[in-house]
Amino acid sequence: MSPLVEFRMPDVGEGIAEAELLEWFAKVGDAVQADGLLCQVQTDKSIVEIPSPASGTLLERSVEVGEIIKIGELLVVIGDREAGSPPTSPRKRPMASPRTRRIAVQ
Image (cartoon, rainbow, N blue to C red):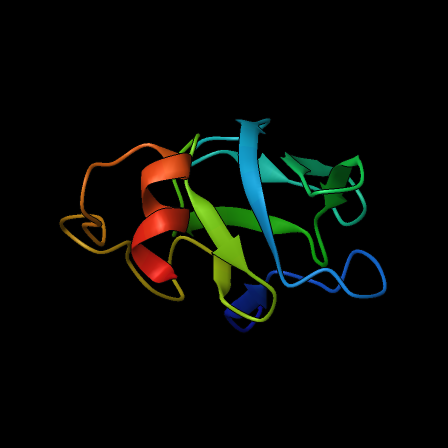
């Protein structure tokens, strides 16, 4: 049984503090492979594909398409289906466009 891996949004470039999630390549319950693509994000400077840090089952996704994630925030949880169960309901965030969220933070 492999341990749960809490993968946080990696530093994708110097001076980058956050990114917008553009696309998921795996859904909760899918098997993922180490170095296989998890998602695609857009920063102020580029579009970046984020690889999986480990092989296992994608148990949780913490961000939805269109949302902003800060560097270091939880992105996904990977492990065995037996090692833990996904939460019964995803973490809820207020529904707002990325631009609206940026304005609200300022």
